[in-house]
Length: 255
Image (tube, rainbow, N blue to C red; front, side, top):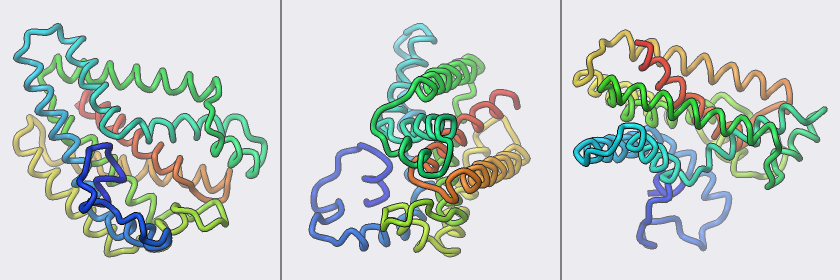
């Protein structure tokens, strides 16, 4: 339930969500443990998108409009949180001259010109990929992309170190996320990925290739972040999730 409330805007009964009285440190610890379910939350998002796409297909709406509605639903389910992280990362990395400036820009609530432009182009590319996949009848990628994007967040939490010395949620998330959480999350991702491939006109090499690509992209962004701000932050984790989703769509389109 904590993973669901953290990664989505789906309404949860109060008794199922995190207690308000719980200490901030405990929330960070629990969130690290809840990371084993991140891929499953991604799969849930994918199922919602898949069902919505199947229902919209029966309405007779133009394909470009169906695609737009699916994209809006995709963004709405996560509240645009990870897209915000992507824009903040672009603003910070492109505008800051040193670690302190970059972190200050990324913490700023406003969005800069480069962040806005990158966000527009990113969403446009995502729309075009979704349109192409829908046109080819290959909407199975809707199940795979959100799941692998959330799995990439777990990899980032395990491999990354916090950029800020403050007792932030990112620091606690990375500190308590261990090998067990990464292993279980990977098993979930692989198992459900294989199940999805069974009903998809693809083979297991696609899934293996996606795993390798997602790991490479995650390592690359972490390395870049380490050079610029000597660690990672929440915006980096969100950006990696969004970029991973886009890559899954792109590779699925080219496959």
